[in-house]
Length: 118
Image 1 (cartoon, one colour):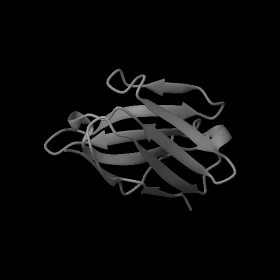
Image 2 (cartoon, one colour):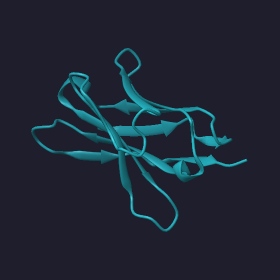
Image 3 (cartoon, helix red, strand yellow):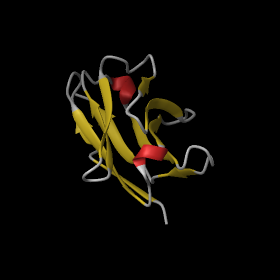
Image 4 (spheres, rainbow, N blue to C red):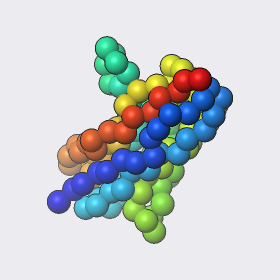
């Protein structure tokens, strides 16, 4: 059974940093695509970053150079290191897995709130 549990959200000042983690069970990273999405109030959910099994990463233009996605195979987590945070980064952040990639099975976590405010 696949389960994704996000953690690490909170309140941070503009310019600050935050690290989100997604604990994944029932997922084999090497055959999966793991991503982070976010949804601000009144907005549609938008893609933030993706890491594919081999370690290939992709980022939305809005976060490129500020956010880093990575996997920790020992802990079976997907992490999102966020830096130079802006008010517009405020959103609920969701972890998504496509596993295995060839089957296209998609799973979502419950989300974690990130608020950037002074």
